[in-house]
Image 1 (cartoon, rainbow over the protein chains, first blue to last red):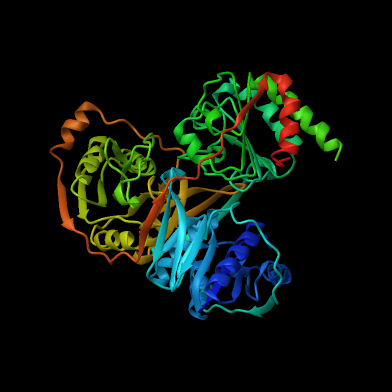
Image 2 (cartoon, rainbow over the protein chains, first blue to last red; image 1 turned 135 degrees about the vertical axis):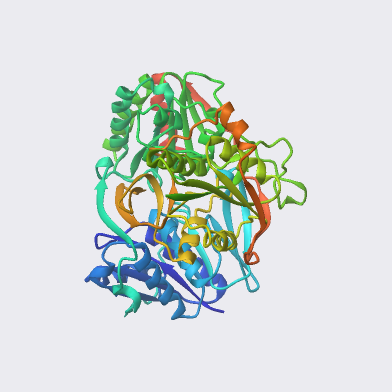
Length: 330
Length: 249
């Protein structure tokens, strides 16, 4: 029927892990559509060297555009390049990651191509000629199946939902030279990037999340959560409830919930969190949920798989010790 | 400086969502509707800018049905000067919504167009950048704080692992997330004044929707969990279960 284009993400010359999920999802969609999967990689000179790894997750062709102008994400420049790439192929679907970059880029490409976009998809189907996407609404309180009546169908996929699958394809690298790339900045300039979180994984992409709420009593107690996070390894990140962010104890970037981030990790710890609807909306699709709260009737225990009734300030250090014991034995 | 803030009427975030008849819509019974929380950050930013500048106008723009007038009045009560309602149905096709808004924005002569990062119902995060692209204006999304000086907005944008600082030349579009701007409550005086502020209604000029809802469903039920124990002594058993039963560690 037609091919699928997977728009891959890089930062500082390295392909980001979420790109494996994008190619995997594109491959699954391509199989349903009876077409092949191409990956599109925009980046600094030399990025082509990292391209073949995308073939491992199902990309038959990897189109690479390398230049200084493409080294760092610039919305207008990237949107123009992606739009050209789409127009230059026979694509019936284009898949992005719903990361900060993808959520900024995909809508612009959709407007340039004049086609709709289904954001933050957690699934898709093909019915005859029609692409359908499944996506959460009302912060995950419901799911909508939406149908496209325009082509190509543009989708961005939620990180951490489509598990990367190795299904090697030819992975042939092909140079792509977009025309509109060296035009001016279009009135938008990136001044600087300030790293925060000491290089730890972003809460929306981590496979283990350790979240603290008001039951942690004060910002001075966050050290024990940091310690547990460290014991759990580099794939763990800290999260925070809205209450502690509003109180100024933790930064907004850690907030999980309706006006914060929606996360879907393998393992979610909720310490001293009561379980307000708005918080649940942000984490209820986590694979395994653990809750610790002094109040046995706290709503969080209704979504938790495992619970401990107790003071998080006492339980967390013991948990960290037990995790270290377990890891030491591995 | 003229500022336009695009807002959307959405259910209150406390709402327990119930699916309506036929499973393709939400049952509106008993639902309280508000200005989408992210749009409130945008409106607050606009009001603060206007107060700091001492002049200029903050106009509200929304695509919706008759009942959206009530939502626009809430925005006027917070301090906006006038409102424009485009009569139409904001469905799940964000591009159709963006086209309708852009058609009106073109004639509104704004130096700054603000949106909430996303509507707290459809959670799509697309209308702002789509409208900017249609209008040919620079756009910064997911901005937690910004300042304007000399025709340039310096924006802080949250991304994985840090904050991007970028500059956009006005006229520009900015979509807001939670950060520096804490929405004010409307005063009684503001609520009274809102009744007299201009509210225009027009038919939306947009495209037809090419992304539509086929079906809605509740999230899959989680199987019931269990309390493993009480206090720190339960930690060892929890870790054992996470390793052996949940295979999560």
